[in-house]
Image (cartoon, rainbow, N blue to C red; front, side, top):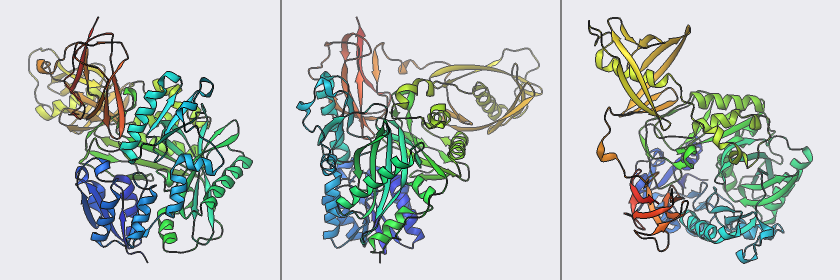
Length: 617
């Protein structure tokens, strides 16, 4: 019987596994990098072991260090979580060789399916592994990492001239994320639906196919919104997907939880890969089937048999991934202090953060997963959208507004979405629509802290007080007056103005604004504002053509031959910045001369740091 489990992962993943272990009375052990020394998963575990360093390659991808940590902490089992080493057969073998229980499939099954090229061959599908095989007739194609997942190490190529650059970038990203730079090329099916089947198998020959999930809403090939069951599939297609998933599991004598992924196009299922691990989106399956997949993983690892048939599915579940990122700025990751994170009751929130935690640059920017379950799809979607809209998220910019708008988009509510959803609708979904009264509410709350409820007025006519805020990249100026009866503003009746609550009335309707301040950052309900100084600081001004780091990160590449004085073309890549396990390309904004290049490969930069200056012709 398992008594102590080390989770070879971090953040939300580790916290999720720990939750089930605690319910089962199992002791928990965390591993953490130096960057995660105070992370929630390290704080929640019964014991924690340091992995020296910060990068994944030095820490969470070091199987030898993790096995030593398990032995040192007295763990008798290792759960790989999802990501990092979860699909590494050598790590699974090392765990077993150390006399520990491996809570996952046999290493041979991991080996057979962890490489997407070998998995396709096993299913009778031949990927275009040799890039020289690609012709114009094959386009578009997808360059894809052979190991790992999560959208990393993937590039769509629509022009043969872009293939070499895509291969280089995908290999670098795959090496950084998974420790394996192998990539392959396969046909890219436009606007298909990403549908997957959750499987669970025991050591007694039973394999469950636990329904379908739709994961079509993706950015950078990484899932954003998932649901179960996948809507709009015919019973025949659903049965075919289940049969193919069970066939894939039996082909490698699979044991434990896994996911078989497909692209559905024109009513046909195209096998993509089998992930030999639990998936980020597993909670929607748990909600629909009323099960705990981690608990079942533990039972299978202890040798227990599954029931002959899986439980019956009930209702519908939808999950949204909350990221610290700015979808309107190329999905740029965001860092900083997460002051508060809370969702309404009735919504499941899986997270690796709590109020006061810092979001760093080393790992994936996902903050949490919010999951809603209801008797019907429409009810589940409505419940999740409403909960996200009312969620309290104080800290860096997130994709919350995008999630709410996506869930309410007609194409999604009608179940007609596909993997091209954000390609078609991103501009509309990220259009800035800040609450027009939010800046005034922020200014009145600030004024109340300085003057008291009715102080600050003078018995002489005077001009209005002026306050400026930046909201979603735009500047807003508000004006208000101090009078003997309190604070007033034109066209609005100020019912109440306190430091943490402002009530305004317009056209006979009162609205409440909850206020929270963190330095110059102000959160007014769901709107985030930045208070601007009355007079700009000259030291913060930059020369025209300055390229600033959109997020903290490390310069990993500089374009070959690029030096100060070089003539560059508009859109030409100048350098690549790595942040949160993704590469971000910095391009020339105009055609002109590169007059400054103050950074080089290996340089770590803060957000807003000067990377280059291009002087326009």
